[in-house]
Length: 510
Image (cartoon, rainbow, N blue to C red; front, side):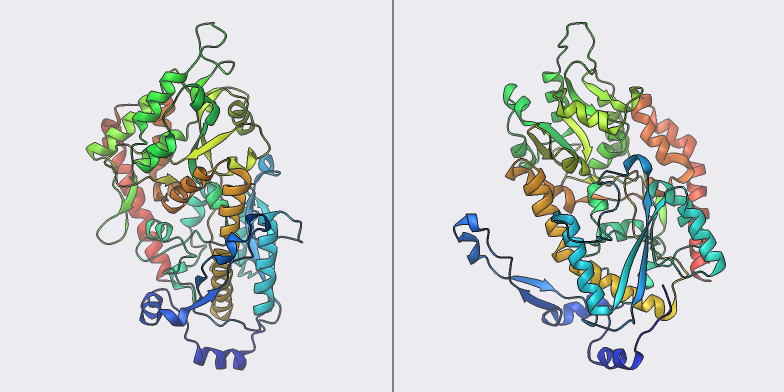
């Protein structure tokens, strides 16, 4: 962030009449006077094709962030760094939610552009983005921190590479950033609760971004094949709580076809389930568990290993060994594009995917529906959706942003997140996923279930003792003696976690 030009006296006068929200106290402030933090907004004009029926839509109560509605930060630059991977350069896996150069008519782009223009005007700042190769971010941030360089304000390393960075003293505790209020709906409370440790949170999911929503796991199915095979309505299965691993396995086994009659099911035939190594982790999390959660003191702890945990894991391993299951990671010379094309060209009933595939398949002819990750058992309270570490990053703030600069950044981020919650995210879900790309109204209902029940596992990000990678390998390696393997791994995992927790606490204390 460039030199702070805040007109201190003017802002001080504003702050005296509008109290600021700290992370630990803001929830109480909001609850004491809910009306003080809301405004009534009218919905967008009705679609002309709706014969005016939408004009009677009820007004929506909109929460307001507990910050000044405007301030003069003298044209300061808010500098975002986002990870980039060359092989995904032309896909939606690249960040499309931080910066937009101009209005183009594309829904997400224009929502980002309009959001930024509003915040830039209200706070007199300039939002800038740099795309940086995933392998360069650690070195760049390390150099900046060592030199006290204040150029970077917000960093998004890809989660798969972020573990090493989060274990160094690079980033500030987001729970201590002025004005950021994690009780508000534009911050993902599941993420904050899961990834905070000893009162320290180094990364967060927010409505500023759609990238982490795109990384959320779901299952697509071929609607035509469901009709051809007289499959019961799968949306009803979800609604009634009967969409389970056993159900997807039974249907997959029933529909698999050796179409060329050579005795083997290959890419030339029809699979029940088109999958990947990632099915191991995401389907296990679909059972509602975390490999790493918290102990009584709020510190990370390796908690995987109950009888149910192991039963769920073994069930997923066994699913991945079936002849009707295709693991595209085991097929040489293929990539994600080839894998997606197999589903689009009619070679599978079910398709494991991240939600970015909904956009990727928008121009295809396949009529598909969207389902959440299946439950382990019907008695499970709800469906859970895993967020992939391979295709997203979460917001972090380097420790070089401090003092008045951190105060300013916190205010701008809170404003961006709040505005995004009511503009960008509805555009992403309602217009982009539900209407533009999804093929039926029911898929929209399923998307609400998926987005609202997401899982972030510290083990997936920090890979303590290498167990995150090892766990994902259980499926493709057909490992079922998991209880024994845990006993071999547990001592190293616990030691690695304890070492990291101690360092995080020490770093936070200066």
